[in-house]
Image (cartoon, rainbow, N blue to C red; front, side, top):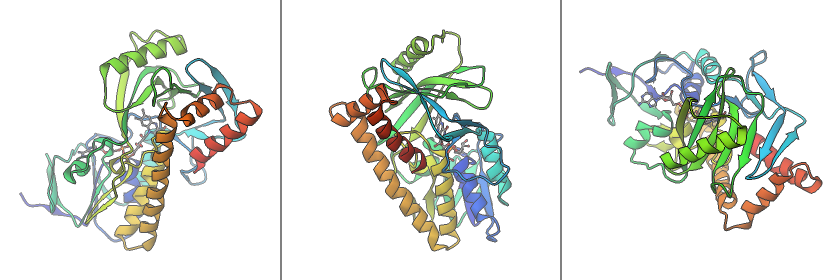
Length: 341
Ligand SMILES: Cc1cc2nc3c(=O)[nH]c(=O)nc-3n(C[C@H](O)[C@H](O)[C@H](O)COP(=O)(O)OP(=O)(O)OC[C@H]3O[C@@H](n4cnc5c(N)ncnc54)[C@H](O)[C@@H]3O)c2cc1C
């Protein structure tokens, strides 16, 4: 089979791959994006973006969240914030916006099934590359081709779907119920809500059952007949540049394990890799800053989620009454550093 020649082949049309394609626009390089799904925006994700994601004037950022319901194993408090910390944009909206900025060829319904040092293959064809970008998320085939594991840290989110728009953004710190996990109620998109739990490690049916029970008890809903879904996140960063193969977003492990925010990091790493490919020194600088920030996120994750260390219980103490004077100062400092940092 003859291979169609491209300068850059990007595997995955999520925020990471599409941002990379957008930043390669106008470079004169022949760029191909291969996406296994039949359209954009199918990823199981909330599609919430923080201020880290810059959007052009007039772009509809969706519902702004200025209130957060903060819970622990046995408390729940509403915290009012002076400005939006997240916006419910929605995955299709984010991805369509990024795609509109690129001049790459985007092929849908083309899962990459084989990767060699010279070409990638899908059921429809073979494509040779000078540069290959793995932007194929937490089950990345490109990462697997490089022989990199996804263990430290990866985790799963499992939730029930409610067929109504989300009206309260709720986050629960649960060191007693399940150390290292958190509970949530947030938007699935602009029309639906998801309520569930995220934990570190592999998918486990017993944990999923526990999450369902927790959802029923915490939100006073009967989860028996609700649709559920589960998705993995990958925060196991082990480098981004492997010769002429690069990893961005979740494929590279750029997810923040503490907040599970990943869209901003996928977009930024896509930009960094694109700039590097077209020979701009800024690309490497972006990737270095991202790697440094990620190392800190992982350190904080280990400190806060270890129930044998005092940090886990200090956070629990803050979150039990985040509006108390001293606690509110600590809450604001941690919260805004995580959201804006
Ligand atoms: C339940 C949940 C909620 C989340 N909510 C948020 C949130 O609100 N805000 C936020 O910032 N982050 C959130 N995240 C994290 C966020 O979803 C990811 O960090 C982000 O999507 C990573 O973007 P990406 O482009 O690297 O990968 P992805 O978005 O996973 O995109 C990868 C793309 O590659 C495609 N693909 C995979 N394999 C192949 C293949 N072999 N061939 C071709 N195509 C392939 C996939 O179909 C997909 O389109 C959430 C995660 C979960 C699990």
